Length: 157
Image 1 (cartoon, rainbow, N blue to C red):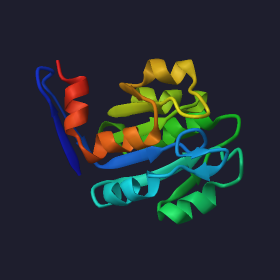
Image 2: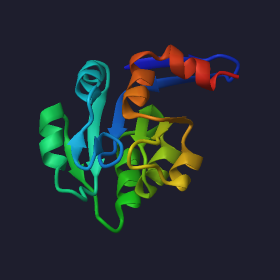
Image 3: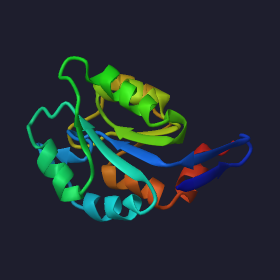
């Protein structure tokens, strides 16, 4: 668990789960980005980490195996609602979510705390508008959770 008090907002995040999107978030052109694995390894000691993807490039199972996290393939047309349903099944109020795409928008909106990534493959505006925090790389996003004082600095009143 990661506990993050947010001064001035009477809100404390008590995170138990982390949902990760794949394409454009953890990977560029299907290749896992440098620095992701060591940070995910740290976070797996504190959170249940899941990979949710429509798996456009067919690399989801391989990446999940490399990261040693569960892999959930969502529908190619209904990926957004699928991700939202999964989030609600594990308790949205205790879950952080990281993504970049249109099919991440509902997940980013409903998670206890969400981070949108504007990476090499860009980011969908709808996801950016739903996220609590926006960063320019997955490493920055994961570091926010590894070092929760960064979230406090960003979200405090």
